[in-house]
Amino acid sequence: MSNHAVPRCCLAPNAPGGADHLPSLRSAFATERPADEGSSPIELSFASIKAIQDLVHRSSSEWSPHYGLILGASAVAAAEDYFRSVLVEIAKACPTVRSRSRDLDVKMSHVLDGSIDTALRSSLDQVSFSSNRAVREWSKKLLGTKVSGDSTLARLLDEFERVCHVRHCATHAGGYVGEGNARVLGVEAGRWISLDSANAVYEILSVVVATIRAYNQFVLESVLSGWLNDGILLGSWGQDKKLFEKVWSVLRCRQDIAAGRVGSSGYPANGYQAYRVVQRAACSRAGGA
Image 1 (cartoon, rainbow, N blue to C red):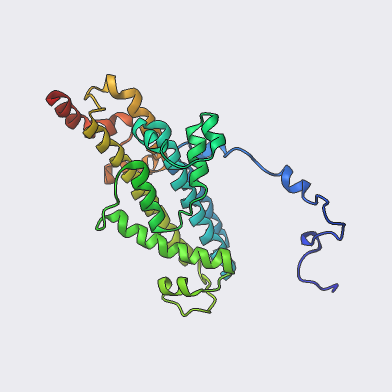
Image 2 (tube, one colour):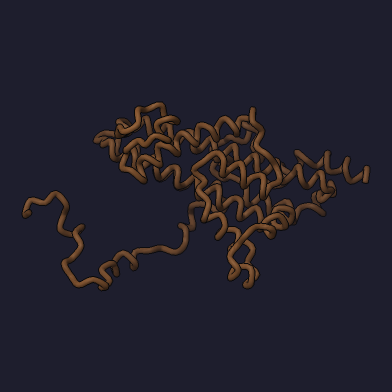
């Protein structure tokens, strides 16, 4: 036993049950996100993905298949956190989404303390967003908009779900492929999968980033479409700025702006530019009211 492969520091001490052996772990917990990672859900998720990308790069010269499963699962975790966070934050910023969230089943303690966002987060924490179906269902519940079956987002969600099956194998079975995962991944059930190169993780990161970016745009379009239909926007930046800026702060992506995607993708550089896209429609609706 003296040649045990696991370092002694990783082995549980031989002490009576009930004792607390993890004080050093608890002292290492951070209860706030790093301040330099951004503030919107997409900014925070991209910061996490950038950290994963950096780890992939550093490990590529001495790659282990175990790295691929661990880092691939971490990428999906970043996406799941994004989906929950963006829905909570948009409910705080948009009165229409907030009114829909009040109809959901939530813990009574959160209802009593009046914290709608805490209540909504509590509900969403019970949902696994590692599936196409969950993202679609909660989008309809909170945003009032269905993901179109032939849209770019729909195709990306299909790809994301396949990535999530890789994550399921990695997280819950150490790479073992169950029957449900096998059908989606096209791998024989009962096998063990691994990601044998850094490029495989880069592919996963590419799918995750594209899915998050497309969903972020979907949320923005859903909210603005609802506002136009309900006559919430008045067509004047002075009158609409306060409400619009709240939503823009939830959905903006400083990484994309800084990377120069503004010109190539039409991504607005600020809230006013985003508002200008819908201002004419808002003026038309307001004038016809």
